[in-house]
Amino acid sequence: MKEGMKKIFIAIIAFVSLPLSARITASLSSESGAGAATLSLEQILDSARHNNIAMRSARHNIEAARQQRKEAFTKYFPNVTAAGAWFNATRDMAEITVTPSEKLPPQVAADLAQVLPPSAIMALSTPTSISMLKSGVLGGITAVQPVFAGGKIVNGNRLAKVGEEVSQLQLQLSENEVEKNAEQYFWQLASLQEKLKTVHAAEKLLSDIHKDVDVAVRAGVAMPNDMLQVQLRQNEVESQKLRLQNGLSVVRMLLSQYCGLRDTAFVITYQADEASPMLSHSDPQQALSGTAEYQLLSKQVEAADLQRKMAIGQNLPTVGVGVGYNYQDLLNKGRSFGMVFATVNVPISDWWGGSHDIKRKKIEQQKAMEQLDDNSELLKIRMQNAWNGVQESYQQLLLARRSIEQARENLRLNRNYYNAGTSRMSDLLQAQLLYQQALDKRTDAFSDYQNKLLEYKHSIGE
Image (cartoon, rainbow, N blue to C red):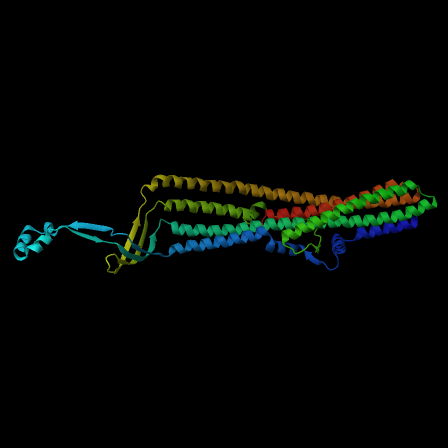
């Protein structure tokens, strides 16, 4: 029995001596199959950037903002309009009745009476109806070039450009959020896989113990109760394995859906980075201007200023010059003509409500400036809090490493005590459980450390 326990202990030491990255990669290969694709963290993030629905939506918003900027640019050019009309009424729209003799001066009427026959004189005295405009055609084309529009065109173009820049920053924020979620899924998957690897090692250990105890019980040197304790512990490990396998399946599906992967049959691989967090520290004040959140707040201030100028422009005169060409056929005789003109539009009564609109826009600009100052402080606080989390998680990782060494030594001592007959099987199984828990805590600490590093890097704009 002592020789068998020695083999078990050697197997445990060999498992512990493997680097974390090697153990994770090996376990993933065994779980997913030799033919599965191997994906690194960068490949996962690249797939998320290209396929996640939030990223596609943000890119659509950029294109929409770009088209809006191009639309605003067209306001610099003349406004060309064309109009035409044709009508045919049921009756003449204009009708008048006249008596020619009443329209003639008295002297002319007397002269005509001397030279015209009586029938003609009678016709001049008879009322006559004249009608027109039963049908007609109208058409024309004009081009008006704005000369002065109160700054609405210039500021409108500037505002559209700011909108495009805002959409770019929103894309960056979406990319940061997508990368953060994808990497969290990645480390969650790695953590579960490492725990499953630990469970596999525990199964092997308990299987070897089961064989040795079975031999010892048959030989009468061990109690049957020792066998029952081993079997109960094996049942617990089997239950843990089922939960981990289900968790792995769900996380793989979530990561696949989030990143737009075609299937869930993939293997992840990475190099464990446990460098001191001091290498990643940045001064919050210096890092502030590089964050997308701060830049977005600055753009909001700029947009509020332009909107205030646009409100002022709405209440200023507008001046334009234009040319036109027109055609009309109202009296069964077509006629065309060209013209040049100038327009001046002075809003007079609009100043009543416009002055209040300008004041409101000025208040909104002040609010945007105050939000920039306040949120800047919050962003720096977030950076410091994220950095504190990195330091704390790194210390937890160091403690977890130390716990593994202590649990390994405890397992070694209990093995010796059991072999010497001075310890019970329950003590040995408890030592094995503590060692397994120490490995799991170390896995959780490493995953938490990676997530805290990720959160800190995003907080400083990296």
